[in-house]
Length: 106
Length: 250
Image 1 (cartoon, one colour):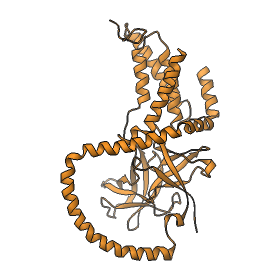
Image 2 (cartoon, chains in turn red, blue; image 1 turned 90 degrees about the vertical axis):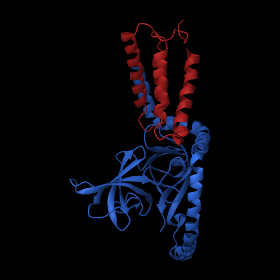
Image 3 (cartoon, one colour; image 1 turned 120 degrees about the vertical axis):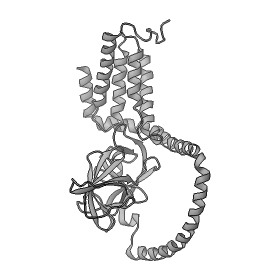
Image 4 (cartoon, chains in turn red, yellow; image 1 turned 45 degrees about the horizontal axis):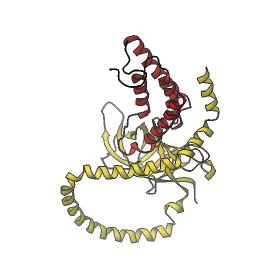
């Protein structure tokens, strides 16, 4: 779990750097890669797994660092987004898209 | 509860936390910024290759016209140099300037991050321009080694402008690099392409900084003023360095 958190820490940090310094040269309105990553993690991971919520907090932290808002603004948004997706999947879907190893079930 | 506790702690030390991350990220952000600029120039040249032949012919025609214009401008330059020397004009002669490099843009809003901060004498409220004397914005917050520049297009920001021949109006930022000019007198004729400069009416910016040019004029019978959409002169993707006006020289 800790290894996974460290990997995602650097992943979100790198995505934030790309978003703020690299991609703005190509498109005027570039989609928020970090929010997309949160949605994908929450959708694809096992329903019982809570890593998506932790990842959302981590991602929100980096969005806050590279934005002019107070620290916590994006943390709360991404946290609520992750919880909403989790609850939505729990109430409307019985099977997760992937198994606990992160691969598609046979 | 734990999350709220951490959020509060981070907000108490937000200046230090953000400054630390900007300091660590600065070399990577500089590389990414210049790589992005190079790559976007390269890719746009590939995508535009089909139009190159047509563009080439048009450019040849333009060269002829420019040669004639150049001769005329040479004469004007001589006169201008003479007047410049006489009046002691020029960017560095007019303002106390500090050069800074752009290292990033805010994720969601119209902000730039530059690599100079309070340690270099910068503080909130200072005006930021490009080397062509184009208005970029204003420093919103200065960290120790970095500053956040609020662009002129920031939503809800407003300042006075002057369109050629004494037409005054109020520029309002619309966010996402969009700027709108309001309160333009209806009886004045404004054309697409008219240059827009800052005005010294409210004293928010020094007079005569280029803002952009009129892109579209909106004149409605039901409104007592006319409005204009602006194509801003500052190109965030094409600029690496900016100047911060620390004060005016007398």
